[in-house]
Length: 299
Image (cartoon, rainbow, N blue to C red; front, side, top):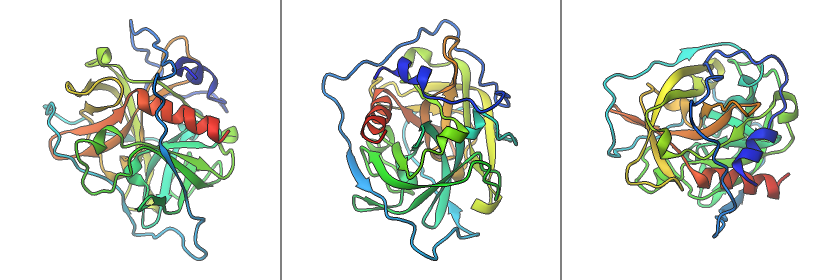
């Protein structure tokens, strides 16, 4: 399935699309670039996620999951602050908090029951995944669209924080299959492959969650974000540098853009890591293929 087709069909708006992050900004002069079927399809492994153990719930003091990297890349002169907002209407309803064993992070729906987040957000036990739960449109303890548990994880590389190496940072994304199509109520987003000729355009938006704990986490955003693909990585899969001042809870949050011909925003990258000097997301053709394959296997 081409990325253009996916972006055009993969959303169910549930209300007026207020734009607290300026997501309606369209990359000027950027042609839609559908990603065709790969000559050698990427077929990631699958891992069944355990059901939530009885009696195990959120830990009020649980720390957000995150990763750091020492990757080379541009050092921004200043970091852009993410600002809190409260809006559970579409498209922000498609973004939510991801709870895992002993922690939490961010993620976004890219299908009716398909959650895109960072691979390092998953609690990996070998090639098995620990329990995970997604709350779309979450605001502190509120769950306006309910919650859904993860039953399978589609991924390429099992990334285990707190560190992330030069190979892992190119594949730090995973598609989690939920036990019910919560996206039919909250809506979901499209997906596009990031391309290097978009470097330097200040037209992107990063959205995710920040807080002292899962119970206090609130959505935050920054708009007008520039992105810069890694010079040594191709469009297939790459680190994408940016200047947002991210914290651990932002891990797995989507970097969004919108094209004039598309009815909905599209995810072009997933927030991956940060260190005192820079931050990085990851995206490319492989991310789009991963979403496509997950939606085909688990419709």
